[in-house]
Length: 315
Image (cartoon, rainbow, N blue to C red; front, side, top):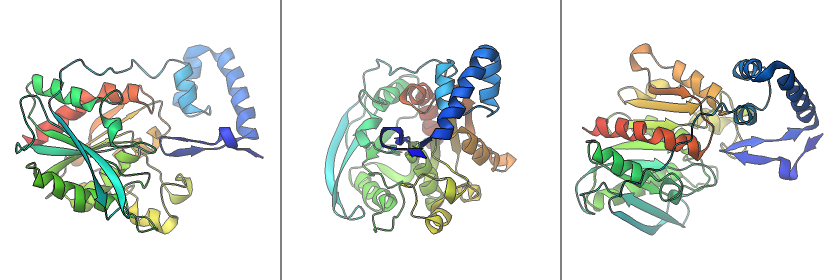
């Protein structure tokens, strides 16, 4: 029997259904935790022997220190809306964050930011991820000046869906040309995303290739090995997964500097590790795996290194 309603939920694009067996096994795991102590339980969780990876990591304090948005004064932010043909007439919002000392219209390189599931472009800024503050911090530390630009992709997983809606085309055919019209240098863009957007960044980078992409940063990317494992909202069946998935297609990123980060307490961590292992040794991605969950606390902690990575590739 499957207990649904409040027990079925989306966690960063991952559908979790709590079954009676899962509840019983979880209870047994709790008993095991009590008997093993934090050290032994931590080894069991890390080895995948106990269920509820994210919950147990959090309970055991294995997610590391939370990151915080710096108090650095950001540069200008410009926001607006436009009607997207690629998203079937939806009104999509967008924001461009400029580094301090720059102004709208300046010819700067730009990294396009792709949000996660059940979010929109505003989650990249302000009280959520606060990327405009991290961008200002990177600039103050001598980083290469560049802009960040985020747009609303809906819950489409940044690729063409059976309905005809295509948030990937929104980025490449509508948003990037709009950024160019506003003076930004879009000859080679950066791509940065988390969760659903982490997958989307890898997917779009592979489609555009090294001639158009200066770097790609995938944070806690929503990845699965096969269609049967994927969240139902991520792909329109096995054919769509085969067409749009990124696992096993690492060679499409040849020539593009890649960074992949994922917290060890994240349910997507095992698949992310396998994805990284699929690169040739000479093209091994930067980043890595350290304590962290699938949440803003981890993503804020990683933001300084990720923006420095993207900026250095523009240099």
